[in-house]
Amino acid sequence: MMATAFKSYRPPVIEPSEEGDELLEVAMGPHHPSTHGVFRMDVALDGERVVKLKPVFGYLHRNHEKIAETASYLAAMPYTDRLDYFCSLTNNWAYALAVEKLAGLEVPERAQYIRVITAELTRIQNHASAIGFLLQEMGASGTPLMYAFREREKILDLFEELTGSRMMCNYMRFGGCRVELPKGWLDKVKTVVDGLPQFIDETEALLTSNEILMARSQGVGVLKPDLAVNAGITGPMLRAAGVNYDIRKVDHYGIYDRFKFRVPLGDHGDIYDRYMIRVLEARESVEILKQALKDVPAGPIMDPKSKIRGFRPKVGEAYGRIEAPKGELGFYLISDGSANPYRYRVRPPSLINLTVLEDMCLGQNVADVVLIFGSVDIVLGEVDR
Amino acid sequence: MKTAEEILAAIKQALPEAGVELVPNPSPSAQHSLRLDPAHAVAVASFLRDDPELALDYCSNATGVDWPSREVTEKVKVTKVIEGAETVVEETVKRVEPGYLEAVYHLFSMKHAHREISGPVVLRMRTINRNDQVELPSLTPVWRSVEFQEREIFDLFGIVFTGHPDLRRILMWDGFEDHPMRRDYVDPDDYEYEPTAHDEVLKRAGEHKAGVVA
Image 1 (cartoon, rainbow over the protein chains, first blue to last red):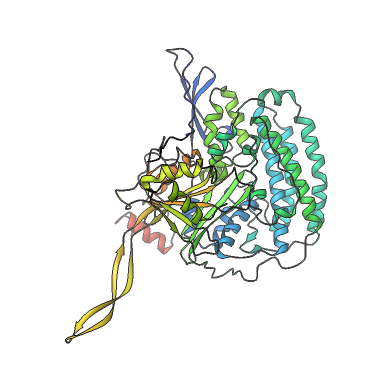
Image 2 (image 1 turned 120 degrees about the vertical axis):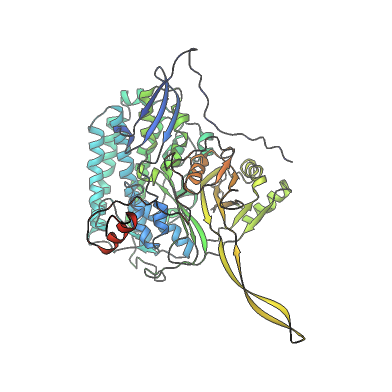
């Protein structure tokens, strides 16, 4: 029998500072401006210091997975928009990718380019708003968030023109995309993309060496790389901890191997690094967009083999994943040969990134909990599903 | 990245007593999986995580699947004595395949992420039945990432993970009793009567409040 001694990662237990001290139990949320929706943290405080924190989920639970299992494959596509409602296009892509793996469909060149363009625009607007919300919670009411939303507005206008909806895009299909690009759309994207570096410069000039931001975020909410890997943290949070793992580089899904871009990595794994990684990732996304916009080929946007009606993949299963702005978004599907998925599972990055919330908050002040939580960048529609 | 067969061979070599079998996946994705026997699952999982060649240090996804018992119709050839002569007769036999719950884990390696393109390594475990023997060993001690996901499986499917540090309901509230992701789950009858003149509404209202509404 092999020894079963292996390293297990658990949050440390913090003893109260003085014996006989009573702990104060506070329920942060479910209705609190910083909880990004309805989310509760049961916090035990010793003075101002956090000694225990338990997240409470489920306020937005609607059993998304069950609903998708009672509907056809295609009918779940608009529902994926509602998971992370900031990034409906990447949600569409992840689901489409999983179904394409399950059914063995190919995606035409042109559709691949459109997917990359829409996904990178989504990433930029997600990171911009995430930074805006983080600063909002730090007390910088207004300016950073309004700057971010001004730019997000331009990107949402592009989405509206392309898909008919600003946030609930429902754009991708199994084996391609739903509609052809409107006339002159790519030129409009080029104009917006050309203005983005200036916006990022502006944000950086406002924030990067801002004393208050640095004082409140440096060395706060530190996440160590070995814990981050073991706890399945993905996305900017993982890379801020210094782990080089970007699914665009690892899986080369879509056509990401054609573009030259760097993966920014952090050193300290604190809130400041998470902020910085998002800024740098947005810059890299601009680079990808510039390369992708240069050579969008002509051609079909749907795989001719793919069927919209009567779509019944063969018996089997598939797990498909992409690098969504918040982390690894995966879909696991089991087909029994019928028109509905037998099992439909969403691997939500927002929920799994909260696994280490307690570890990051322990020993910190209660005011920092709000910031640490904000730096994770979650959307409750995806956490609770 | 190694294929499922190679990983199976590595497990057999390191842990000969562990029962592991390969489950082929006929879909074009070709993501084959390994079924572990629950008694040795934690040992196998920690081997997969800590072996330097495999280094499957990242458990991405954990989920449950419900397989209720189903009736299978099979054609069996039976030798019968008909009128003194032995003849082979085809008979249709119905038998009930017992149901079970399944936990599925998807593993990747962050350490070897950039070696070559890697698919997931899929692990599966089965419970004995769906009613009273639903325990499986928790893999949370090995991969912290499944802490919330195993709570979710417990909540929605009803698999009890032994060795989980904090096994509570996560999405449903604590007083909830059933497991909504099971195939045979029935919505509770919390119907509220609304006086619309649609036949199906009135019919349901009548079932709900027998005798009150015509």
